[in-house]
Length: 430
Image (cartoon, rainbow, N blue to C red; front, side, top):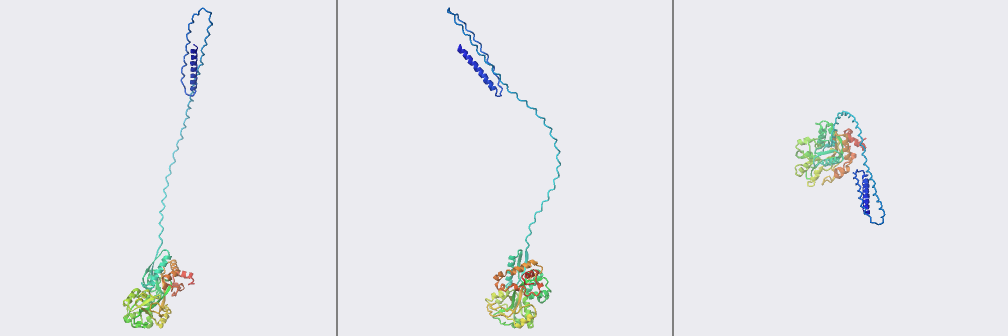
């Protein structure tokens, strides 16, 4: 019986503990539904008391200990009511949207900058340089001068044109050439409208750049020719075949005419007497000598003429001396020739002696309208490159001296201003 009561007590305690656990669990914030407390167990019916045997009265039965009333389970703590959601603050009425400012009219697009113009091409000065005929000494010298100028002066391009001394002055005066070779006496005739320029009138457009080197004028015949003297030439004119150079109005015919006038005749009269004249280049004249189509040639060389030197290797040639009285008479007439420079020995193979003849200074002329600075540069680079000239053309280059650059200049006003500036800087003109 006691065991049964103990079991009930244990069950009651277990129920209390369960309730306590549930209460604790309900404190976690999650509402729980409380299970109903179990109904208390009904008290057991008392057992019938047996009738005691006749014996001494038994001790009174112990009063049963009442079952402890279980402590009521604590009511579960109700979950806190959620705080009332505050009423939302009234949304302020939106401020009226200001009317957009009027969009200003777009500024006109700037005009595009013009495309840059291409840089102008450097100006090129094209110059024609008129010189002597092929086979002459002037021709290779002109080619060399052009090379020097084109090497040293930017923007200058030069071409060589074959010509002759008198014709060259006319070409430069017309402007068909800008640079030309000539002779001092011919220049004097040209600006005065005399001699071979009598029909031209005065040439007003030519100026002198400077003298380069002297040129010897002389007659040449094959060594086997019967012509031995100057007077033989005049006497045999009716049967002679002569070449005086490439042009009828050139320096060659002019010098011949002035020489024979000292003997009382003229160049035109000799032709009228039957002298046959061929106006050909020195190279062609040399070939005609070799082929026996010419008897005599009149040459201007410094002192040798390359074409005649070439033919001299197979057909020995000799020069005809000019008599002293003829040379003195020529000088007295004031044409500007020099008569004191004989043809040097060794000029040709068989020539072992001096040959009296006439010389005149070679000059370079330019058109008066060429720019002063350009002519200054032409003059400067010509004389500053003498070493190259002497190296590449030793025969003629070794006869060029800047100190002689004004030989044959009879009037300082005949110099181009650009050349005059250079010679003043170098002390040749005060």
